[in-house]
Image 1 (cartoon, rainbow, N blue to C red):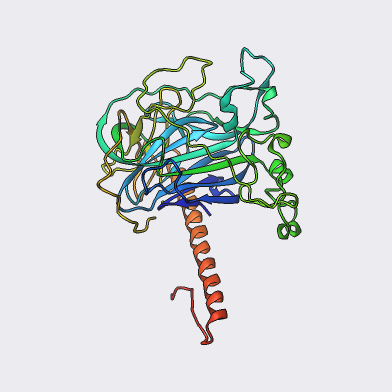
Image 2 (image 1 turned 90 degrees about the horizontal axis):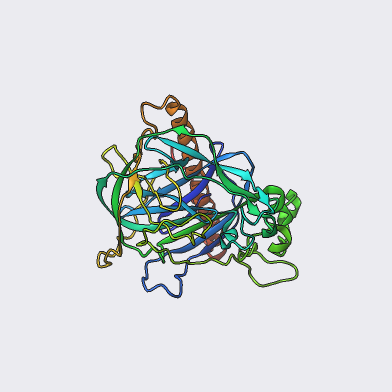
Length: 401
């Protein structure tokens, strides 16, 4: 089922089906440096990737009290962001490279080189290879503005000494016609250095996850303990433990990823020259919905790429603290034809009907997984109550026809 924190639900979709998740870890306590009590923390998991397969990012803002900005980092690069009004759900299929065209997300084999003129073997961004990170910040939406979009979605080789051989990275497919995107201003309520919630998906080939003990190699092994080897020995990301809350025979301590809360300089407008590390500091620009309803918005950065599109349900949540003052004013945000319900493609898209159907199927599967998880938790609670209460308890969790 999707990862969920603070009324925000995020999951990856491949072939119109939610991707399997393993070794899920929740970090719900606020960061020690966080001065704001409402930060929800982090959630992470591992997913098996297949080179050449496209995927989508499904997000639901189940909150009824506040809009959120969803910033997407692929392998350490901030490629876009999306603005979600209360109750809005959306499936982002790729990065926008023009007002109407986007390039789909795609898993690809990692290309390596021994030429230091092409790739720096000590590039600090290598530690984020194999990670899809979603940062969520509460925002207030402003007026629509005009912005130019360029095709900067490129994947470059990494140095062979980076110990990443045999893994995957996110690439982008050929351009696809999508709904028209426009830009709006937003104002952050949360600090970009301390987001409201963070979701991390560590993607690897299935065989590598099995070698790391994260995915069982057979049904019988599911009952045993999962073994997590040294990340350097299997090409894991530098600075990220592959354990994620698992225990091994040799090490009884709980292992978890080394989550970093890196500062993002939202005020900088400097274009970073080629070859200079971006240090993940985007100047964010976002998109929103032309339909009149505030909805999902894709973000444009000066050092990254373009954006995406959206659709999914919502529940009541606690109101946002109105005494929290906005922290950062962001210029240029743009949005797509995305609504709380309805089509996600513009009428000019000849493939819109097929895409809408796939999105609806994926959305329903995500919701079914979520509901099944709730049913399982309720059944477990009933069993526990029956063990402590002598009076028989009869609870029917099925819904009357």
